[in-house]
Length: 399
Image 1 (tube, rainbow, N blue to C red):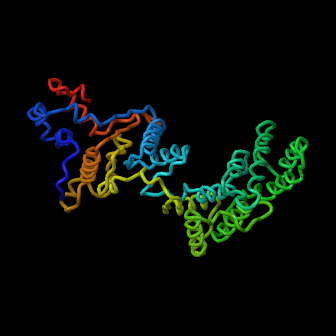
Image 2: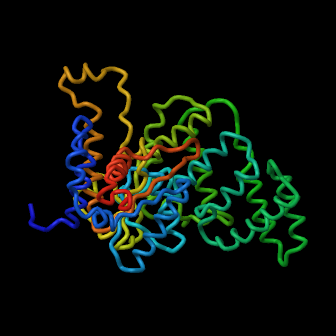
Image 3: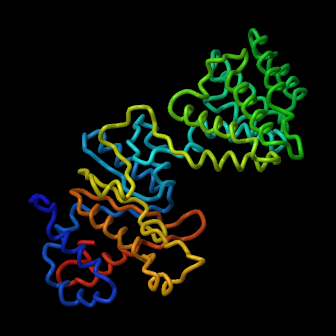
């Protein structure tokens, strides 16, 4: 224990009272009017209620950018991994890489996405959107001549958008190449590149099942061929850097044990690949920003920052809804001496109270998701209800 004084004693008392358990919330009537300096207690707390999660992520990213420019140590604390990914993507606009304690799921890393896109070529007939998505991926044609690949991809996309080619095949791609080559100087390189597309990308959607080792071998061969480009460069970037090394380890492990997998169709193999990649986490090898962090609730228990942003404060996210137990109800768990699901909610409340006691706090939530309106976190409702009932001491004005 240390003797460091609290950042705001009035704030601590206010939060402690707002989090009293339900059976003793009648204490609000007696102890609420005794709270002092409500304006000071909430002076450094900012509540952001964004219309959508995307706007919430953008608001958080803008505040983190300002903190980075001011040299302020800032941390986003949230259990919502989708929100953290959106914030990270928004920060990338300004070349700010936050130090994310949880890393990134391998399936969402560039190698993971690339491998899943290639696996999808075996599932369904190649269409224009799938082709362009894969051509624009940073690991496609990642060896020598990457700049020409990007230029040719732009020319090809313009022709496809202008004249249409819903299901590209070798014949259709050649026809488009000849049309575009008439407006190009030195079109031989473009023709060779389009011929490579027609040879490599279409025609992999073969119905039926085949042994898992054959699925893995065909998938890896096609992935490496696409990554090597035209002309083939063995020094492509697919298996390089941290995420690439992790993806290669997953594929090697799958190759070693594929003999026990039996036969499956392409869709089942794609699902299997996605599940295996989702089990792994990778951290960015690049040096993150020294003052911008993203923490989970557990990591935030042992460290702090000058600016703390509590993101995703909606019911079901923070606190997380208790998972259903199909085997034991509450009474059976209690008789067996097992912990009740509400214990995790209590720990989440502890994390919330500890984080909101920081020097400067932003609280953010989205009013509506893609599907329905969101319910504010019970802790926000409690704090708002408590302050709303303290009209004589300036509670509504403080909130």
